Image (cartoon, helix red, strand yellow):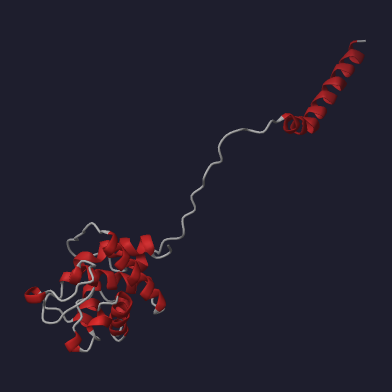
Length: 196
């Protein structure tokens, strides 16, 4: 009798186990009530440019940084838009923005009177007398950027040069090493705005 009782208990236990496995998850979902609450916002960030594309050689020397106002930010975005229009990569935008940070602090400068360096104007302090364009053209951020980048494209191997060397080859500045100090801020601006 003991054997028969044992078989019955084991049979009932087996049925309970089998029923729980097959019915358990279904029953659990059937009893689930909707969870009330606020929807959760999920931030989706566009891919930022690869830092090795922005600063392939690492920054050179001590870095400077300034806080940008709305006008300076708009000018940086205009440089990025013009770079994209020219079909150039992010590195060209970094070089362009660093150059403008050095030349004008990203301000679209008009004629500064006695403080002016010859007839230098605009974001890149380009000179009408040197063939960069008319005063109206070189104070247009898109035109000025495209003119600078046209010069950059004519520099053999600009993509592989340190930033200050590439910028100096186009700008022919009296302070050829000054561009390097803006590379990190320029790269940060491009990383933040390239895909926006």
